[in-house]
Image 1 (cartoon, rainbow, N blue to C red):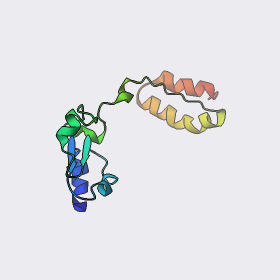
Image 2: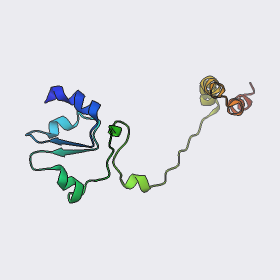
Image 3: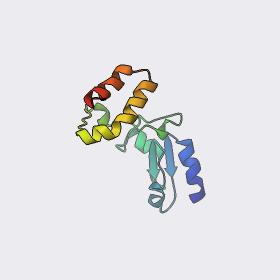
Image 4: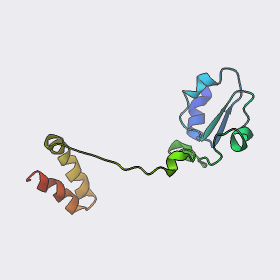
Length: 117
């Protein structure tokens, strides 16, 4: 079973059933699955319909980079960032280089102007 875990992660299945004793011990070693059903008494259909987990899950190996639908998908979030002068100075060269590489000269200038470059 241990040897199969890299393959399980690479496949990134929508559903993974670990139908054996001590299934919980393998859970921490898995990263990519839409939903995991632990033990012999937890079939996928229970999770899909009546167990309280989710039936809207990532398919086609997309569990590598996404999760099942959850309340977090309905929560509005805002990213906030605050730099001091030294932090801006440290990050400026990379930000300017990336902005220029993308052809976003005004973005690059917005950093340079703040640092009087």
